[in-house]
Image (tube, rainbow, N blue to C red; front, side, top):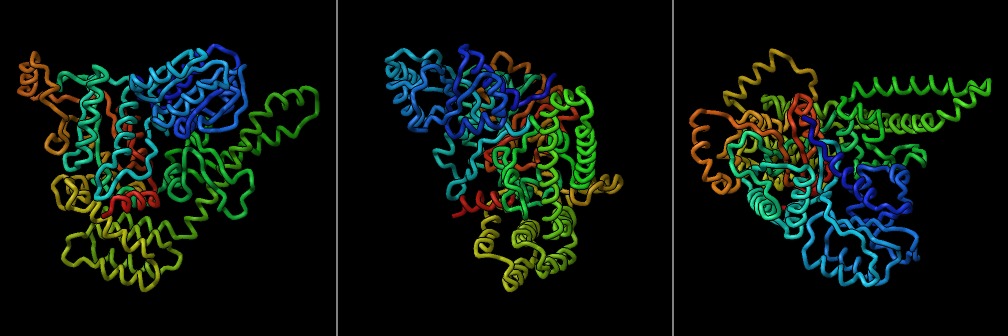
Length: 573
């Protein structure tokens, strides 16, 4: 069975739009969000090859008449977009219109468009469910930087957008026999799960009629507040490091702050679909990347040496034929050498290896006195950034929240005296405890002294840890492993409207299955994390999928530490 793939799901829809428009010359009209959705999975050069010669925003003004072009309109079904489209149809600039909405369209909206089509220009109106960003084959985002409203509740507009995005994802993957489970401790997760269930049940027959069906798609809705640790950690795999230390936004990386950067490299595209080196090294650790970039350089130098030998007509012909690939390789080398060099510079400049080791010790070890002394040393190390001091204090605050000899206040005072904490940083620590402290969580993130934790630590001790900077394992991996074994407890992650999902005719067989102790394992899992995901979690899901699981991971946003601070503070009272 093929792996689930959100990139292929969105590419399928875009390909269909272009193929359904049989005219030779086409223009692609998008809004701000759908432009991002398309740019994540198609390069402009690919679309040009499909005879798409114009790219326009629907809200752009002053466009001259282009009656020779057919317009493929791919837009979200918002009131603003509908109003703009109605104005466009009253005074059409294009010869014909093929209109595709990224989500459900209300019936009255179709009537409004029909009434506006006075010149009979509209050829197609269709719903294509591509209302999310496809980041990696198994990772998606709704591109909502801040989900939480005041007191960590839903904002109406964000809630509506979340429902639309998640329903769109479910339909684009053509999921069947859907069981929706949610984190019981989160009111936001419960509210979202109820609405997703209601919407999917109203629109299709995809909801499972029997929760004991042996072929299930589990939609698991969790809240970032249950694991506030993972977004605090420094990262050591390529994609995650770039996002943490530089930032990735819609596959674009801004390198304008890099010392001595060339103008053509101030912004680069990092897309694994069109960059073989990036695809190969997405999950490589920092040490391996350095080795691999050296191999890439040597390959380029060898090709460059061959390119310089133009001694015959045959050599010239070969040069002309291979020049596009050579030029592409040259761009790839320049880009990745620049990025890896910058990562290396930042790691050394800010003493990140030592910072990360203390982070890992805080989360995975338990010597309190030793940790306090190490934190004090960091506070007095002028190479360590303010944000890294904040990370460490946040991890300490979560780890030792209710410990009697907690020294958080003393450490904060020492950091303030050394001017290592800004005003915003000081307020973030209590906000984080309110956000993801023990009062909210239903999970013991640090697994201190539980029988299962002691067993795991013993086994891990026997095997050894390959990488001291990768000891921490995100909570979502543990939840998914339990779910795959059919062991995730209903008491903590209940099933929405379980009674409605049991077919009365199957009630006896369901009871019989339970009496026999048969474990029902999902055939595929879709995860949605309210409050966003991280690339560290993406790495672990990728590894699970390599071992045969079929899991899609996504959430409101892909966070690094900087964006996570904004997320937490947005919901603080």
